[in-house]
Structures are given as structure tokens and as C-alpha cells.
Length: 243
Image (cartoon, rainbow, N blue to C red; front, side, top):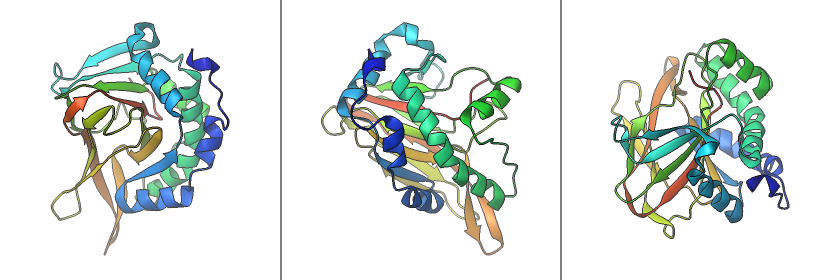
């Protein structure tokens, strides 16, 4: 069981060891940033293998049925695997200063308390009580349409996707895509390959963009390019719960 895994350097320590100044800089410049290694290959394999254990999840989404793209993903129940829970709890205080800075620049409310537990209590009080932690599986020909993971009015502006497979070995294609709607200009796109065990932090909805008149909203969407071969698994960490 994944709960028994405790290799040298627990998840919280690995999250803390990321270069957070560099992560913040990349987020401010581009709206996304890689963290460096978070999970071992063994942890990645065991998390990916949980996809076949239906009791771990509250629901399964067929993307083609909802015209989200092609492929499947599953939402965990609140009884998260220990490694997943530790990862989520370790990220929140590291992302919180960035979230508050963005809110200040955009002159928006910053309702996020100092702890994830208190923030989730606020989400639940507002009617957002369903787990939003996602395990995604794409096979050949699968893809994910550009979108934003907004599940209600209570939104945390950053989230994390962790690569569980080895690009070029376990699968080909399946790059992570982002588009940014720039102020008074054409949209800009980017694509990223997420190495196995690394996290990609990215904006859930908007990021502040410097303009001659101050700070402006930069709306962003994310998706996944077509998987060419193999099977692509990723773990999605969302810091607000769903309606």
C-alpha cells in the first residue's frame, strides 16, 4: 500500500527544498513553473496504479462524453493516499505568499487563511465540500481541451500537476499546454514536458501582468496535447474543494 512508503526525504522536505524564489519568478513571468523532483519513481508508479482501485475515487469523468477532450480522470475521495495528502499540505504554505501578492496586485480579495485546513473549512461552509484531487489517465489519441479548474466561488489561484510517467518512455506526446490572453494583444501559447516526479505549478485562472497603467488580469487556460503512444498518468493537486 502507498501509505507504507517513507523513502529518505519525506514529501514535505522535498517540497521545502525547491528553489521557491525561482518558482515565484517563473510564475510571475509566465504563469507556470517546474518545482524539481518531488516523488520517487516508485511513488509515481504506485500512485498511478491506484487508478484501477475504484474505491479510492468519488467519481470518474469520461472526457469525450462531456466534450472536454478524450480520456479519463478520477476524483479522489477525501481519504487521500498519505503521499498525496502530504504533498498538498506541503505546497499550500509555499504558494500562499504568491497568491496573496497576486491578489494585492490585482486589487482583489485574499480570503486564504494561513493553513490549508482553515481554508478548506471556508470552502465547505460555502457549499464546496467535494474532493477536487485528480488522477488522470490518457492513452493514444487522448487529449484535454483548454480549460480552467474552477469549481465554485471559493478559488485558490494556483495548482500543481505532478508527472507520474516518464516522457518518451512510458508515453509520447501529451505535453502540458497553456494559453495566456494578453492585454490588448493576441493570445500566447506555451507547451511543457513534465518530468517524472516533478511538479508544475500553474495559475488556476488569472495572473497579474504588468502594463503601462499598472497591473492587469492575464486570463490563462491549460490543457494537454494529443498522446501519441503509451499511457500518460498525472496527479492534479487543487487547493480548493468542489461544489
